[in-house]
Length: 194
Image 1 (tube, rainbow, N blue to C red):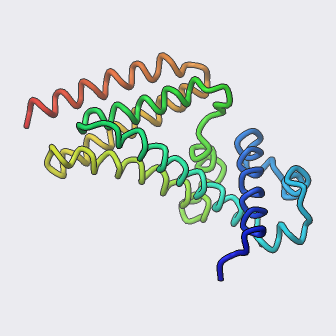
Image 2: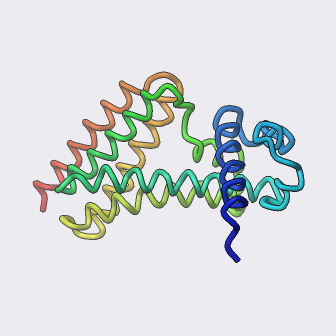
């Protein structure tokens, strides 16, 4: 049964507040009582929507992943070529690295804090990483054989993940410039070898 509008709003408010706290302070360091206090909700309201902290974390990750997908749909949709779509993904990352609220990748942090591959939080974070790789594979599959698109998408994902990590330690500009150049070289080489 769908939530009433006010309940759905309250639930979304909790997700967004938890997102801000998890992003800033980490998952394990942020307690439920802190989220309740910062969100200004009753304990009963929190537990009605989120019976467990892990469930809340998974919902936060899923919400953030969906927001990221919508952003990429918007920017990559404006490009007309596979290379342009891939460049738009790198452009998005550059803008993110330079944004004042950049605090690293929430999904990378989740993978680090919840290292067990069968844990629900780990699975939610890994799914977002696979989704980005799949998006790039699908873009490249328009002009490349499936196995080549797969290999290049994996390489591009590695470049993005590495640049994201370097951005977290203050090397974002250098990292994204290098990653973008490597991606362009890889795509140019793939285009010549078709």
